[in-house]
Length: 81
Image 1 (cartoon, rainbow, N blue to C red):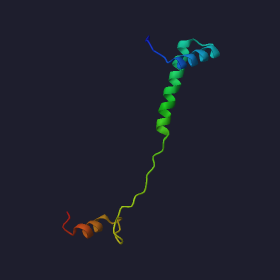
Image 2: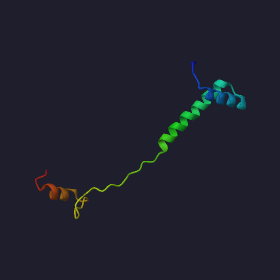
Image 3: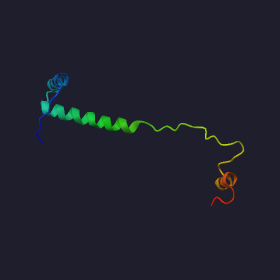
Image 4: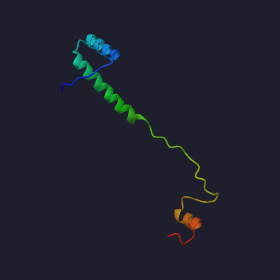
């Protein structure tokens, strides 16, 4: 696909230097750098681990949340259904 792309001067200079260093055409250097940059960005976004922060639920002492139905009876009475 042919398109026009405006590059910042510092980016263009780095691409030209890389093209000269590798002996590859400028177009191939641009495409290669874009592919690498886009794949790294996708990987880094997926690499961040999910962390859960523990919070105090503020329950009264003596209430066991493992027994949900008993908890509902205790908090709302036997007519909670």
